[in-house]
Length: 418
Image (cartoon, rainbow, N blue to C red):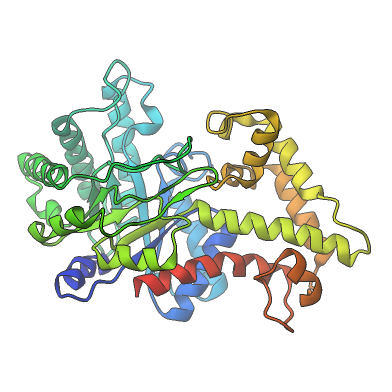
């Protein structure tokens, strides 16, 4: 059975480039919105989990790869999405969660992780072994990186389950996961010679282990095309600056590029990325940012419908939850107290997304939705706090507002990728 992602390089070389949206989130409402849109458009859905988010030890979500598959398939059943159209991906698969350990035990953990991903039927695997472990340089040489990636591919090949042989993504020249920490001025676009070297050293490392067939299923390289976002600013795609990088694909048959941190790009920029061979568009924080906007808006609408001005109760709860457990934001946000407060709630990096599963946060959201119940939201009120939620004269309920906020972002990607 042919993997559907293998069609992307073929389409690019046939002069009809198209792309796919990679949804990087474990929030159930985000996944519901993604699967519902894919159902309506009759397109496959690519849902990815990172090595820190999901692994054999549970990650920060508490889910193993098998758990995550069951979680996504349960949502698919709820919305009527055929699971045959579901593509699950593992992102940054390597020793990163265990890089505080020496290389040998860290790589043993990484091999166990990728085996679990492959056994659970994840069929798109990004091999990322570029980080140094205990006692090693922060960044490793291309040769060491490729040799470790080939070891992980060997494990995945031996552990795979399901009808599809896995396809692989290589390369590690990516933006900072979750967005940049400092203000953005310029970005260094990946050089064509770096692309060629990444490809060649990985091909040699795979061949040294007899994995030529697996290397034929390397479909993409991760590169930096010049897109990024910080707390308040976005670097938008400039096709002219990325022309040499894009043209380097001519020498790499069977490959496209994967673009990380495409969040908050203009729709025209997303379409230009696809046109220029950046066929896999990863998005995550923008989706939960839109969800957070909708939740805060609904909190205000609920207060108005209850007959009093907005009190910001949900925001106050989330502030306390984040203050009580600062591990997910304190190394990413910097500044005076007022700046930190604003970043916690409104930074484009959306570190608040890590806190929605917390018991107090979940209870606050559940209480908000219980207050609203199945009441329709008059557009005259919703328009004040949720200006894009309802068409003029229209009505909707809270659940539709939340999934609709995410869907509107994803629709931009789907139009750009078509």
